[in-house]
Image (spheres, one colour):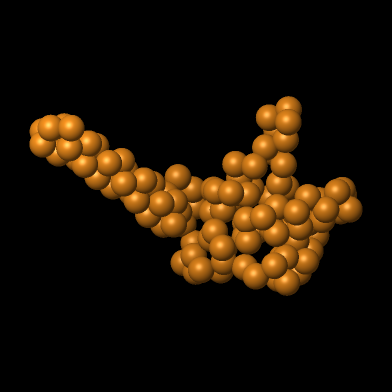
Length: 110
């Protein structure tokens, strides 16, 4: 491999790394969704698995489909370690929770 090819390969890898870092930073700052003053309370990885039941109880408290909501919310919470604020919507705060889809392409997490 020539010196020019090595330099080009390193340059491409650096650009890819910078692009990935920018995506992570944007996601951690809540871009593309609502902005909350206490991001540590709702963002990705903001919960411990033992906190999922109480957060899902809050999330599912106003639905008439309480049991399925609790089942899927807790499943999503254990995977994503976050539950969006409020009773409905606000999923952009937790990208993992928002982007997990069913086999049919619908949202998996309530």
